[in-house]
Image: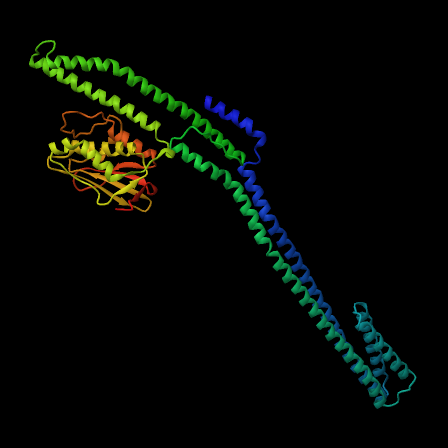
Length: 491
């Protein structure tokens, strides 16, 4: 409840400064990216529609002009034929046929003048004027022979052919206009392509606006994961991310308080236990030495049990205090690289008597490596693994330490020839105080925290410890990030 109240208070403080939520930024970015593209498409559609209408109208106008010019030529030819027949046969039927054809011709000329373009209208008017003159001459009987009629109508035919030529010229002009419009449309489409980089720029801008607070938050989350809870979690950006940062910071503060309380409790309990434990150990030693008098065999056995239990409890308290101290001293900025072989040789020297008593061979890696882990932390991990291997190794066995490089990690393995770990217990052996079905033949029992502390320390460096696969014995594999180890230059 206190955590929720603290988050709500921080949100209220930051609320006036929160620009947008992720949803608002996403919608706004999508709208701004889509708007130029939609405008370009709309302009292109309008241009295409206009070009289509222009082509359609041009085709219709040109088709009408050409057809009308051809009809005018056909009517004039029919009129000449009817007039010639009238002169030759002197039959009124042919004259009336001529008059009907002339009415159709005049109606056609009027229709052509309605929608005629600039160069065609004067030609139509000249043709009508010339035809009217010939018609007047026919009414006045000024044309008495067929040759005269053919001569005068030949001029009309030439004018009609000129009209048809003007129509063809008009076709060429309309085609040129359409081609010009198509060229303009192509230019518009090419200009519309400029919208794509503009839209990409806007998209990248909003991606940066969205990713920037996330990129600020990621290292701070990793810092919390590594156990650094001193510095606050702070980001700028969308209100959603600021809210997440507020929750993480409140969680950080709570974890910091809990960690302080845990360390304080462990320290207090350990120190409180040490005082009565010292008295118990001192009394047990006095009894064991016979200072208070001789003991029976039964009493001696009880004293041995008290001494062994007191020693085990003392080691448990020391392990808790040492681990507590190591956790407080695990900041990444205080790391000092150390040599792997030097640490292994030092641990072997410290446990030399144990190795000799069980005649165990100790095989080291062939090459030396620099480990970017505090030496005390590396010693804690390896010491607990070696201690576990020594307890379960048979007399005359072999303990081998090997190191292999993977794609993104290093695998440090400690292999013994003991009874191994049952598959059902391969996860449980890292639980505090867990004891498997197979017990070590050691006079002094461990605290039950060795593997737990080793795994916890490996986790501090984004690593892990697990039971590996081996044909005989037990294989403990320490996995560490690739950046924490490198070969020695002189190896």
